[in-house]
Image (tube, rainbow, N blue to C red):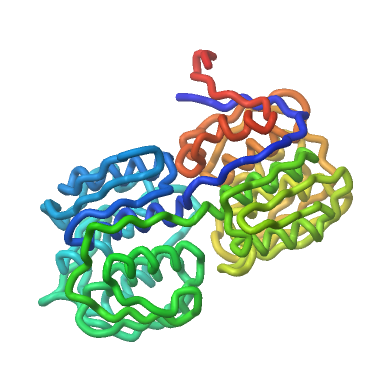
Length: 425
């Protein structure tokens, strides 16, 4: 077991290069199962979720190796089973993309219920609705495994999602790529990593149009071909986290190797709160200010404000004099971080889907824990803003989504280190 130790009070200044998108990588890697050959994916972040996927693929006969920093070669020609029954599958939520990929490859798939961060009820009914529309049948085995089967393979269908679901959109896309006929997904999610997945699959021979809109069409092809190289987009949430870090420490950080268009909802909110935001072609500079204005946020599917930046923004809201509000529309248990912030002196009240932040906060370092990935990085931001020393446990959650966190933060002046439970760095 390891912990982060953060000493607050430093203004962060400098440039941080943003890694490849976690949310893209965890979709592109399972998608490679559909390819009859090998491919290379570049700009892959070196994070725990990628390592977990690598272990899962190895167990089902897929070769996956890092050929250089950030580049992985994947060869699925020797995949030997449609069953991914390892306990490793339960370590991450995005392992459910194996359902769509294996179903598309074999016409059947069996996996355990996925794990990952606990945000309360996160049903996969829309995923299963899509698979059923394409001719799949499913059975829950001993409340632990999902078994999907087809009679002769999947057939294209028209699918209307009852709610906008990133996971269901991606899973249906994966299943539909090699299905017979055309599949249409209406009320589809529009996130950048969905567009990234479509671009990856199209580069391998798929025929997908409409991503980035609420109607996606997938014309099934007989097979996807290998021998191609693809680079993932930058990580929208990592970039946003470091932009907020500049604001909460009254620092001056340039996040480089980003797509500013993906960051618009955050950039506009930071400016509304009094920060200086300067966009360039592939970078964004955020200059924090001592005077922070209150604001209200409602999380929504892209291009709305992302739920994955909600916890981090509460720390910045805590610098404002007055009451700010966040309404969470995506995950019902997103507010688990609030109890940890209260240990540091935060004045935050939660009720149903709402959080009320009364500032300004005077945070003091305290022992806290990560309750999920984004809650964990929020404790880091709070520690950077607080007086004294903050110790953060359960950091395996943070390792799931942030590459070289210590190196990137110390590179801009943060006082943060990783220690083992016996106190050694």
